[in-house]
Amino acid sequence: MTNLDNAGMAFGLVVAAGLSTAIGAAAVFERRVVRLASKPVLAAGLGFSGGVMIYVSFVEIFGKSVEAFGADGTEERVAYYSATICLFAGMVLLRLISFLVHRLDGGHHHGADAVDLAQQRSVSVPPLVVNAEAPQAPPQVQSPAADVEAPTDAGKTEEAEAQEAAKPAEGAAKKSEQDSQLQMMGLNTAAAIAIHNFPEGLATFVATLAEPSVGVTLAIAIAIHNVPEGLCVALPIYYATDSRMKGFLWALLSGLSEPIGAFIGWLIIKSTGEDMSQVVYGILFGMVAGMMIMIVILELLPTAYRYDPKDKFVTNSVVSGMFVMAISLCMFMA
Image 1: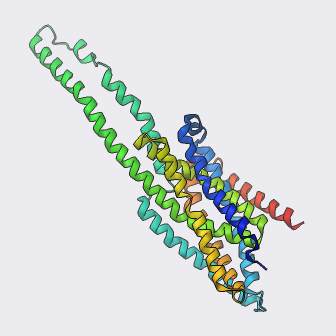
Image 2 (image 1 turned 180 degrees about the horizontal axis):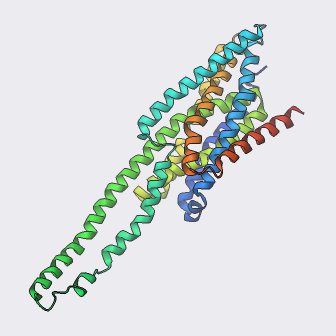
Image 3 (image 1 turned 120 degrees about the vertical axis):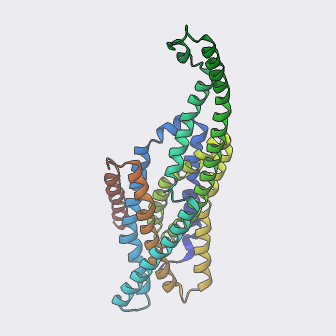
């Protein structure tokens, strides 16, 4: 049965998956990459990852939980019940984590609002500059009372000039307020993503210990959906601070909680000893399966449908993810 022989490989996969947030964050260094990260692409990526995680949770990891509980001769029915309880316990635990995440993130979903606001910020800045520099002459040209009340026109001209002079200050104030909002949103998104990445690191670590092939596929799926997460953190912080490096580093840090989750899993397994390892594995597999399912239900699919409200890509991507996971498992079983 499972042991810690694959611990090195498991840690490596977790670190690689966690650091994939840096791929999305790197978009701040090249605007053309940001354009490539369109909403349909993000929706398809999230849907694909969700399909992989749902399939592997129900078909592989839950089965490993049942197998672990029954390894010491426990009746199959009891082992199945135990695994089922752990599955729903994991779902409840992730629901509590999600509640904390949404309290931190102000109800935003996977940073989607942060990306929307950042894109608005990048589009709205040029018009502010244009409006501040462009003289608005039409009110003077089309005034029908120009030859009757010349002094009044002069007064209006002075008022218009005063309003034009005030526009840069108003634009600067709005920009400062928006920058502050963007920076706070980016930091909150980083904290929220760091919290919900924790169980993903645990899931990848445990799955790799049980079956390296499953761990590799799962790590790839998690890495895929970590890419838009890095983008969600880096973009608003970059637009708020004008520092590409700050956006990149905060996004990078948000992914480092996955190795922490793996380390906690290693400590749990290491501290229990060989006598209780099968029960511990059964509990971990069951809870990890439940947490992964809830990550898909609460985070991945809602965000994917937000990017793709007409469902042009999400459902097909979910099925594609399941199919790829199924083919992977069949190949390694052959």
